[in-house]
Amino acid sequence: MKILVTVKRIPDPDEALKFTGGGLDYSSHKRVPNAFDEYAVETALRLAEKVGTKDRQAEVIVLSICPAGQRQHVTQFLAMGADRGVVVDVDEDTLDTIAVSKAIAAVYKKEGADLLIAGKLSQDNEGNQVAQRVAGLLGTPQACFAAQLSWDQAGKSLTVSREVDDGVETKKVPLPAVVSVDLRIVLPKSVQNGATSPDHAYQEGPRLASLRGITMAKRKKVATYSLADLGLDAGSSEQEVAVAAPPARAAGQIVGSVDELVEKLTKEAKVL
Amino acid sequence: MSKVLVVLETTADGLRSQSLPGVTCGQEIAAKTGGELHLLVLGANAGTHAQAVAAAGYGAAAVHTIDAAALDPFTAEAWADAIVHAVKTLGATHVGGTATSSLRDALPRAAALLDAPLVAEVVEVKAGDTFSRPVSAGRALLDLKVSGGVILFTARGTEFEAPAAGSAVSVSAIAAPALDTRGAQVLSIEKTASARPALTEARVIVSGGRGMGSGDNFVHLEKLTDLLGGALGASRAATDAGMVPADLQIGQTGKVVAPDLYIAVAISGAIQHLAGMKSSKVIVAINKDEEAPIFQIADYGLVAKWEDTIPRLSELVAAHTSA
Image (cartoon, rainbow over the protein chains, first blue to last red):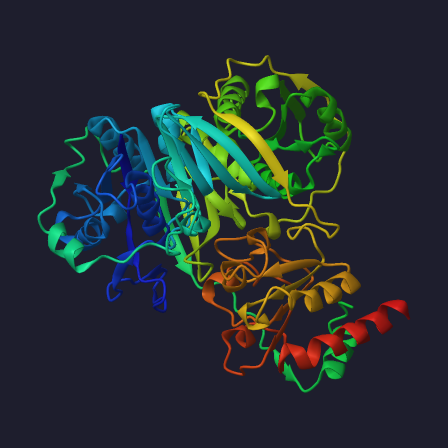
């Protein structure tokens, strides 16, 4: 089985935003991997490995759209344990969402992958639409906002618990399929691959790269494609007209006691 | 002329109230483009539910239905097929709805099938092709202009009021197209059982953070919540620590809420939490750390431990509500 995982680099979400004449200036921001993509890679690795052995049930390929010279995040994911990388060499900020989705679908087909795992959204743009779009383009089923995942290798299917508005939905999808993951996919027993013992408890969260992993990463293969190689262009369906800080809330007040708080909520704010 | 199609969701009892803000967003797009609003009800029993929708009208020109067993339970696969079919049949220029978990799942898939742009989590309609949406955990508002034969949108439920009912309109059925779930099967839906209102609909929310110390301590917040007739929420730190179930989480990765009153207890106010609650009308913060970022957006702040304040607050609220 081949698992393709999409990964994106984003401006460090812990740094303050810099607003400049109708836009955002990210030039001085450090670029870091999108957290949900770290969860996606962790999910793929848990599906692939048989804990306690060196056996792998799947090959894990990380895919990123970024300038080829700025793929440090891809190397980081290879150090975490992914087997190899694919880079679509273009400044990702110049692509519209349609083009991003088509590029991912094109690489998926080129690789003959059986499963795409994506983070449910990127923390910068928060579009929450690429995985769903890719599933539509590929004509595969989709299981979005996954909190738990169980792989039935014999049945060639995944059973996925999805976080929906009023509870949890369990959906079974035959492979090939597209999955987008939510943060609870990295809880200790969220991913079951039918090979690792179901009692095995992973450390919570995405794993850190080991020293050996970091050394190995340099030797792992990363294929590079241009948009033209994939028969695509950057698309022009989206135009950022302006970016501004949201209106600030009026300054609040510190109250001295619970009694004063209730008095204010009753008489001033009139919400009690 | 534009034709704005809004997709509605139903439950066994009728229209899902969460669908209504999407109708208001659709009304605004129709108004800004001088076009018509159309409503679309999908499901196994769409015809029946559509009657109630048509009676309320909501300023729409017509209510359309696609009635098919394959649409129930919801799957993104079958719903996307149905939405694409409705768009093509009606010649819609826009299609969208409230950003519920279902439409966030199905509409991007439909957008790909239509080779069209989608603007997610719209908070304001600037023009028929230009929409404001929050980015970077709500720290910035992006005005995005899109072009395409069809424009798709999801509207953030907290930012649009429910629409006023209008005059009754007619219902017309669209013959169901071939619907393909691509082998996907919904095995179960476990609804969170709670006597309290849903977080996204509650007028009052009491929310606890890691500072509550343990899940057992949330009983104090539950008492206050029930006295206020509100819903209980939590920060990611509290849900990650397993103090309360994950579906109580409010924030960038949880639910986005905007109640009349939000009481944040022992929550520091991480950016990703603020992203989910800062549109609340009145925010109260109770935290023992006076440097906690939550105080920067609070209307009323009380620097104190929850242990020293919540019992008294419950007492006063009880006295107030019984008075």
